Length: 201
Ligand code: MD6
Ligand code: FE
Image 1: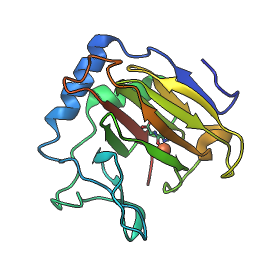
Image 2 (image 1 turned 60 degrees about the vertical axis):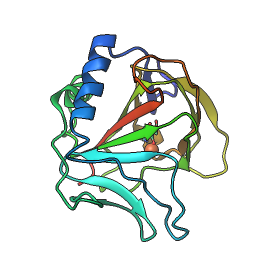
Image 3 (image 1 turned 45 degrees about the horizontal axis):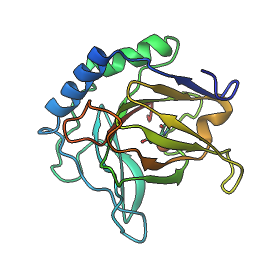
Image 4 (image 1 turned 120 degrees about the vertical axis):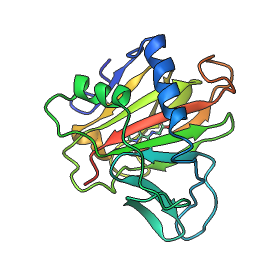
């Protein structure tokens, strides 16, 4: 489904249940090598409600010093594990003409977690789209324009949905207002995983 021509694309039910299950297993198998960390807000140092980790050459993080990509895990100092093939293949299928992603951010939401409106603008080349995969409980996603404070629209992202932000919407403000607990059986303890693929370097 096209949300906005030339901008946001939503592929509902893109992944089969089997593919979703495989992807969750692949993510979980890498959490020993790349444990979830709790990012904190620039300047205030306040903890975010979402826990994160990364796969790929470089990973996104946030702490009191600001947002950035870095090649080492903030807690362990280890390099990030490679992006699993099951995740990369979604990019290959939907974006065959784009360079491969070098950053895979994994967001873990418990039932009370949310994410404030933000732009993805820490990457070097905004002409490459961002691809996001939703797993587990349904989330309420809010999408605005490229200026903060403008009109927004909201839609639900369910397990197996894939979204692309590209073109004009590559720099659109967006966030997660809430999680709907108990809407998916995919994760044994409930909650939601969002996997975002980007070319950062
Ligand atoms: C989330 N997603 O779905 C948060 N960013 O949990 C994002 O921040 C995001 O879904 C860029 C492109 C697509 C996204
Ligand atoms: Fe984002």
